[in-house]
Image (cartoon, rainbow, N blue to C red; front, side, top):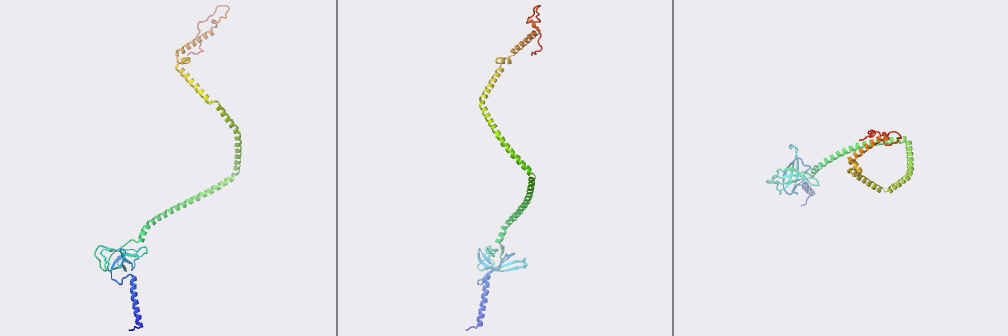
Length: 321
């Protein structure tokens, strides 16, 4: 049987439509050659989850996200339909954990298997979300941002301090400039005095040089005098002086002990009393001799000899203790 051209075109178009249908569903993630169980999960936010994203069990791909619908009557929550392979038993209490798909981006759903009885097709799983890399980075970066903010504030304070210091330095430099100008004016006004002072200092230096020349002979003579004094044997002289002082101490000790004439004179009251009486008798004798010299010297040629009193009174001119 020979097919007409129109029949061939119709068969080719039908085959193309069928291939397009199956190709679309395969690319979408639907398994068109095997039956699957459909489960539902409700999330408040899917964080970019799209249809055909994988469903993993212990890291193994066991299904795909089939459909996502917005539930406006339930606070805009999202209903996610999951196609899971028929041979995978899903017990009650299983949670569908929404997580990041890794470094390449995207979202995946991890099945955390529960311990209850097996669920049936169309049942609802527990919806959970896992902190993704962005959330972890945000959590770790938040303290760094806080520290960076504190550091920036401290840097602002330091910069403000530097600005204030700069103002102070500018003021100091301005004062230095004023001081330099004042010094320059002062030097200009007293230039003549400074020249005269320098001249006087030069003259003084010359005078000091001349004085030094004159002092050198005097210092030489002083050195000669010192040598002469050294030649006087001062050590021997000091030894003789010490020996003399020692003998003097010995003599004074003897006098203190009552030895010798001087010691007896100092210590013996009898000798003192005898000397005192002798001095009194001598005083009386001299007084009598002065008042009656004829008694002792006879120079009369005629007449009776005047002997005078036998004893004259004590001469009060001499004080006797």
